[in-house]
Image (tube, rainbow, N blue to C red; front, side, top):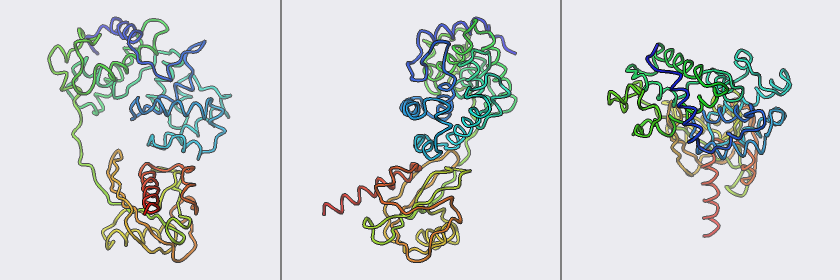
Length: 376
């Protein structure tokens, strides 16, 4: 499979990690080892999110939901509000579902075997490897972006990293590394791999001169480390114009406004938003789009007013510009046609609702506009 000396490599990783690991809130070691619940929450939060961002979220989460039982007993809206801003909200919904299943079926303890873990909502091969190795010290492999990059450079893999054959090889390499770890050091070995990728073997300008594995790195030996891993060709990211209505019951800032809850499954499921939708070819401009979307989603008629703010935002596979308009409710009682629920609220009450990042920017614009108007 590889000419790497896995025993040497694993020992070096463990020793390097012990000396150089960052101090992070989820690395607290208790009597008996790392807490499986904390490992689980931190690893889910860290997926596609920077460590610097996760640290504060993790602390707030543990204050609010310190145990699996506390998470299972919580209302989903509280869970989504605590998660607000981290994105990928399906992760929060799955944490909540899995916590309830763990309490109901496993006496509140995260399982310590692969098959049972994989049966829980939102838990895949990476999370299984992290839990089994870090929390339960089992030699289970992990493969995140950092680990892929380290292994691709160590073995000078010159094929695109997303190819099935390459991914299989990377999983085999990751397994060989952790299985060669010193006794009781599987978790330290895996964390060392991730830490090395995050701090030394970085995507740009890897710090090869201080890397503990440089003498074994085939890409560094060939001088091609900056070209590894080979990334797949990027596809053009589509862009959409989207409208949102800040719909007032009567006059702006002197009446309640209407918010809608997104369906529980799917993108941003369960969050609340200013209702609206995507501009279509048949729409005669953004105001016409907003009127159509509100009629289709809530079965009401509105009068569209001034533009409040335009917000640009990038999701994983597409980008949007969200155009938020003041609007006034003119006819009909809201109905849950394209949404889970709706509610008339005061501007100050919005702080209690879990909102997407774009809608939180709309709320900030509303407060700023009201303050400016009051100063005139």
